[in-house]
Structures are given as C-alpha cells and as structure tokens.
Image (cartoon, rainbow, N blue to C red; front, side, top):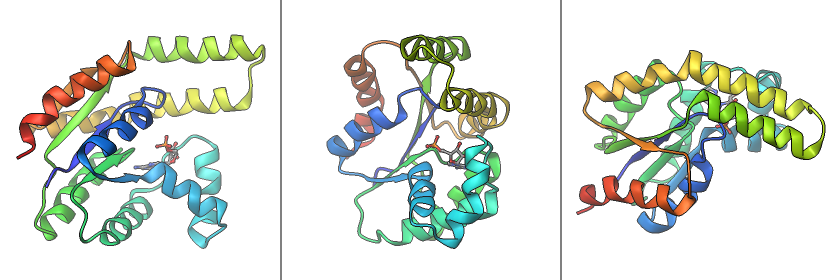
Length: 191
Ligand code: AMP
C-alpha cells in the first residue's frame, strides 16, 4: 500500500498537488485542516473546541488532532492507500502516526515536502493583498500560519530524513512540472 505524507507550508500548493496525486494513485485523502473545518461547520463539540485556536492561526493540541486522525483512518479499512495532508505538524504527531500505521500493519512509504522559501510565500501573500487592494484579516492569519510552520512544523523534516523517507521537491513554478517531479519519486514505490 502506498501511504504518502505531503508536507509544506501554507500556500505551498499541497492541496493542488494532493488532488492530482489522489487521482493518479487512487488514495484516500486525509486533510486535518479539512476535517477541522467540517467539525466547525457542523458545530460539533470538537468544532467548538478548536474554532478559536484555528481562527488565531495556532496549532490545535496534539492530543485532539491525533485522536481525530485515528478516527478518520479507521473509517477506511479497505482503502488502497492514504495521503496525509497537513499532518503531521509536530514530531509527536509524526511518532503517533508511525505507531498507528504499525498497528494496522502499514507504514509511511514516503514524505514529499514542497520546498518553498519563506520569502516566496511572503511575496505571494503581498501580491494577493495588492490585487485585492487591502490588507485583509485572512492574509494576516495566513502570515501567522506560515510563521507557525517555520518555527514548529519544519522540525518534522529531520524526523523523516533520519528514516530515509524524505524527498524535497521544488514547490515554485509550473503546477504540472511540480507534479511530474512528485511522480518521479513516488512511481518507483508503486508495485
Ligand atoms: P490547513 O488547512 O492544513 O492549513 O489547517 C488549518 C488549521 O487547522 C491550521 O492552521 C491549524 O490551526 C489546524 N490544523 C490542521 N492540521 C493540524 C495539525 N496536524 N496539527 C495541529 N493543528 C492543525
């Protein structure tokens, strides 16, 4: 089974590339951001609990995030593979994911990290702000999330590097070129 982690800062193109990878490799998409947004939209207890944390651009505590992820994975016992998008974001989450995959007799096959510099992301946001002609709240929140990524989440990379599972892919440029770079490192793992 092919189990992928797609990694990168907010705005790196994880969502766009995930969509293409799901189609090509027939994977179950698990995006913790999407799951949290669904909980918030449905006003579940979990949604109410995480609403303010997410609105501020901070990370949701590991305990809550890991429990939600477990539940979601268990909903797909017959999946032909998973793509984890926006998870893990901390080393504790990465460890939990490994032990959880182990429990179900699986493992993470590869971690593809979209490499986009903080400078490029800041420029993308600035450009977006210029286009709309105003500095809106959403852009401010995105900036906070990018800061969270470079201060906290980036530490997950050495965890997978040590396991020899990390592939860094240039995340700047044409969408199809980036996709074909991803396929080049993933294809050899598909039997
Ligand atoms: P995303 O759509 O992946 O950028 O996630 C949106 C927000 O949901 C993040 O800014 C966090 O507040 C929260 N979130 C999503 N995934 C995680 C995670 N793995 N750990 C902690 N918080 C998360």
